[in-house]
Structure formats: C-alpha cells, structure tokens
Image (cartoon, rainbow, N blue to C red; front, side, top):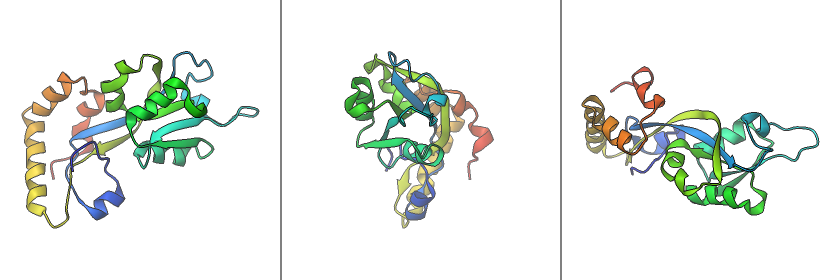
Length: 179
C-alpha cells in the first residue's frame, strides 16, 4: 500500500513498513474571512467562547494530534481530505477549521480560495509504504528503491515538480537513516 499512509506504532505492528518516502507536517486551515481564527492560540479553550470544531481526515495523525493536545476541541472526521477542506470553506455544521496534511494543502489549496493557512505547520510524521508481514523481500526492494531515489536526487526532483519539496525534506538526513 502506497498512498500517503502515516507511520504509526499500530500500523508497524500489523504491516511491514518501508523507510519513510516523505516527511509530512500538519497545517491548520481556516476561512480567510473568519477574524476569530488567526493563530493556534485561537484553538485554546477560552472563557465565554465555545470550543472550536475542527475537521480532520478520520483516523489520521491530524485527529490524534488534536485529541492529544486539545482535548476540548470537537473533531469532526471526514472520509476524504478535500471534503474536510470544503466543509470549512462552506462553514458546514459550524466547522471552524481543518487540520490537514501539508502536502494535501499544497497540492489542492488553489481549489479552496476561501481558505488560508493558520500558523506554522506542526506534528511532523512519516509517509511509508506498507506490505504484508510475510513479504520481507518486497519490503527490502521497496526500501532499496526509496533509498536510491533519495540518494540520486530523483525524489527531490519529483517533489520539487509538484511543490512538495520543503524544509522537512531537507532535514531528512537528521531524522532517518537508510537501515
């Protein structure tokens, strides 16, 4: 499986996980015209202000991030990333914001002109490929391909073409190795 799957201890216990092929971060998004939402401080619980309602991809690292750091926030799970962004853009069901994978925002953001990024990205994690546990040869081949593409610059060229190369990718050598 190769489609923006976030590494997690649970997934690693169930599947063979490759070395990371992308380092993602999470970006908070809100409506440009919503003056009540201008920074991460606006997520905090404040007296006399109802808790924020934030859309996430259900079962994602974004949901975990919010539930662990902001337990008072009402998270609303969506099956699709763009559905969550659209709900914020349209203000559906009082949703105030969306915590989204930065690569998704980078790729689809131009299709959501009423949204804006709030604050710096947070919650760095890793996209990995997953294989059945009984396929170690396949996992080794995937790891070799990723490592070679990192070494020879192919991944950087591909990510740059789609505006996905960023500071987190540049820091890769400090965070992972080729084992």
